[in-house]
Image (cartoon, rainbow, N blue to C red; front, side):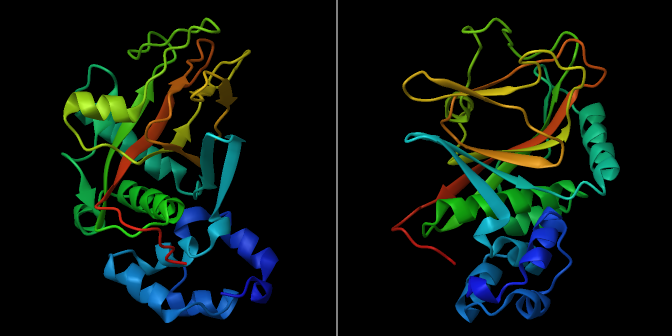
Length: 268
């Protein structure tokens, strides 16, 4: 695909709309140039919707943030024009769920793209698929299948059920590889988090997401509503609460597993 053929202002405007790009493959080609037919065949064979294919065929869909030689994370934007509907479904999941740690599963176990499409959980299935697709782009290896489980996570402003220590230097980190091992689940390659609602009235490090490098160095991110942040599954991270906020933090999160990965291979 020749980047010089792109209508760059239109490309930027389109990508800002995230996973809701209303394009067929043919429309995508007309706007942004030719790509190899084999790419379409490979992606279609895995069940990715054509509008997700169109948005994900461009590596610039997401930003790779390199914090050190051993620690990176990725960010991409999703469509918030329907955020009220996404939050409505997410709150229904919370209301109908039962969780001692305020993590409310959407379905049992890990599902592949086809199963997620069949479940068709309004808005949440589409977000999960787009998160999986971006993880596929990051992974860039051949694999047999891509699987994900997703959940709505609630961090209450007052009395959060998660273990949160707000004292600098004593943040309570966790990794999704460790949690998955404890639960007997597959080891996740990546974890994605869609930020649906963030706290306000922030002071200091309120609401920040801290991540830790292998040498113990700490970095922090202040996520924004409309962003999806992707971490390696084994990256230690610690979200901080915001006790003065008027709003709880609500996210849609998921672990992504690539089964039977083989040699390096880029679909693009």
